[in-house]
Image (cartoon, rainbow, N blue to C red):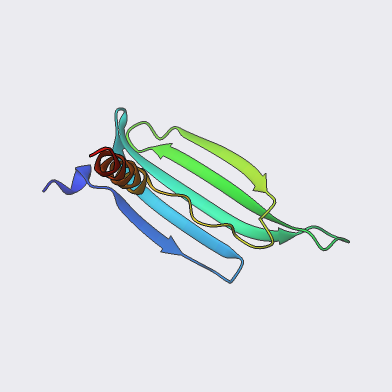
Length: 105
């Protein structure tokens, strides 16, 4: 194994409203270092909390970097049922086909 071609990810947190994920990974342009920081930030004078994402991508060979900052309104309320995965969907289709074939015999 060549360690230079492996993807490495480390997640840390400074407090309950913070997570930082640092990754290094091979790309077509060489190794990239990605830092993804998410923090919960209350809006002043409201009961709204935003999730701020700061994404920094650095090309290790050139030192060039790009930073993107986005804000999300976290979901509140009940979470709906989990969607079927592609594998489950195929299995269900096969079961339905088998049932249809059995009914036709």
